[in-house]
View 1 (cartoon, helix red, strand yellow):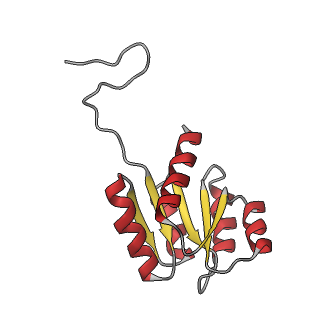
View 2: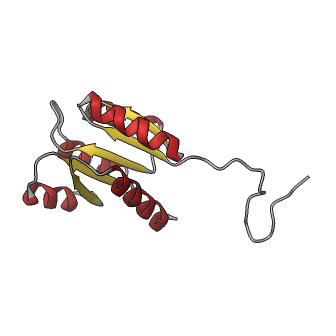
Length: 138
């Protein structure tokens, strides 16, 4: 039987947990793309179609990273970001937008987003950004 070593390392046969990504976008195509691209890379991907649904997820699970559209019907990304950060100050959120607007991007950063990306997103770039942020957290 393998035991934990003094160095605090888990035994090699212990399953590692997958990083959890919550993808929030009102466009089904974007959510589907995120799921189909990120799942084979080893992420557990949760999907929400609006801000309210994303906030409901946060009551049940604490994702490693949230990828969230800025412009969505109902509760938009900026308001959802503000609500998320009130309860989960350490939550890592990356905002996505199809509209290049430095002012709205800066507002997202001011409200606690770690980054914002402009759609269409180069998938390899997204992968690098996610890996970088996950490494910085650990």
